[in-house]
Image 1: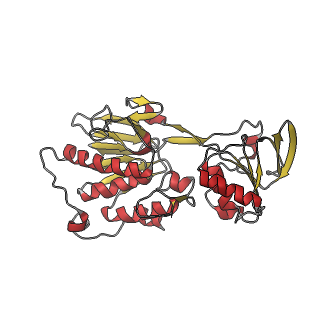
Image 2: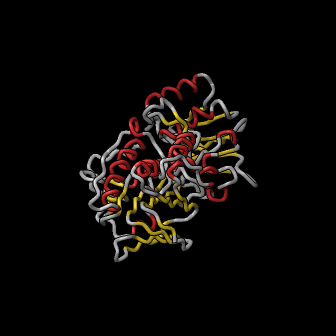
Image 3: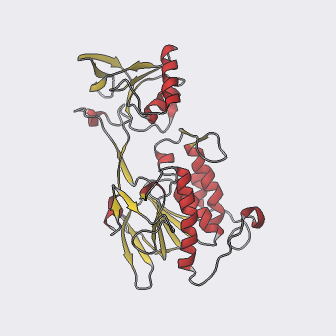
Amino acid sequence: MITTDILIIGAGPTGLFTVFEAGLLKLKCHLIDALPQPGGQCSELYPKKPIYDIPGFPEILAGDLTKNLLEQSKQFEPGFTLGERAETIEKQEDGRFIVTTNKGTLHQAPVVAIAGGLGSFEPRRPLIDNITHYEDKGIEYFIKDPEKYRNKKVVIAGGGDSALDWSIFLSDVADKVTLIHRRNEFRGALDSVEKVSELRQAGKINLITPAEVTDIFGINKVEAIVFTKEGEKQVIETDYFIPLFGLSPKLGSIGNWGLEIEKNAIKVDNALDYQTNIPGIFAIGDVNTYPGKLKLILCGFHEATLMCQAAYKIINPGKKYVLKYTTVSGINGFDGTRKEAPKAVVQAIN
């Protein structure tokens, strides 16, 4: 059985930053994540996508943010159970929790922090009869490595930030980029819409609106798509079709843990410490909800910081913690010296 001070469900940015904040309080952390590597959506869905609202970084790629967070936390030697999903939770008589994964791995801790982002998720697929036949054969729901599309023909469908941002990015990578949206208006940021318009005028993006992809053709892989515009069907040859319609978030097994749920998110007390209706279980980051909640990475960082303060009181009852600023006290390992990071962390960084 794996034992720790704080068991973190989810190894995305919020979960990784929790390791750092807990480490400052001399608390050990272990993280469980269904994905095979740390980073959550930042690593799995859009590692090459730029993020603009991380303090101190005018722009940082999602994958680089993950690497930086791992580097920041490695001195506190977090443990990882990766490629396994937290399945059940049981509270012991001594107040500690036992969390079992879908592969039977047991974890024990007095505090559980759910930092699962949107939870488990699956892409929203367009209503095209034969689309599943071409998955992994030219149909892509996420863009992990833009180089995969170098000098290829790409059709992107969608009207949000992801569709706009990737159309802009791939216009310098792919041989031809076509963006199809069912409306003339887009849901994404205004500057992205303006950039797409500029690239269209420059001949670098083929923009088709209002239109909708209705069929896919190809023998062993995607070779062409059919779109309908103003009642007429037209064909575009392509190597890849990338529908970016967002994700359908699901809490999965966590939804059966007796937690108070509201609109697929876990309700917490934000006036105090982001604790759930079950004492000792916290929810931080995009997975939680409370009045005025903003689903931003930087908000998850703030919630993680306050949660760790509350966890310290649970783990060390009656012991007073005096806040120390890192500018004064510095950052050291558990015994006052820096330590080599465990192999799991080193491999994740590299």
